[in-house]
Length: 83
Image 1 (spheres, rainbow, N blue to C red):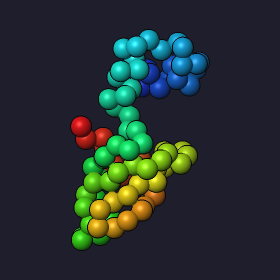
Image 2 (cartoon, helix red, strand yellow):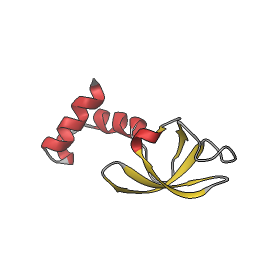
Image 3 (tube, one colour):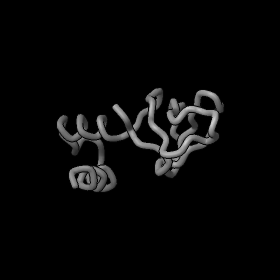
Image 4 (tube, rainbow, N blue to C red):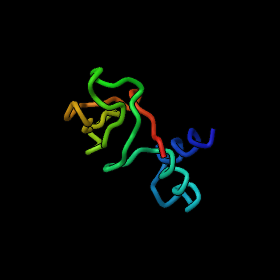
């Protein structure tokens, strides 16, 4: 519920409208470049089930690197942020 409210605030206005607590929550929930994420399904049976996010492309897609596979384009529905 809190994430949904933060997304609405981001869409409605500028970054200045969010307080520091909101930014702290966003940083712990949203993936970032150079961050490791867990994949729901490995691309192959021989590759890892985690990926290093290289850059955000657009509309929820990320260019990532998966050990044992290489570069891959991932939709944000294909991974979760594991701290």
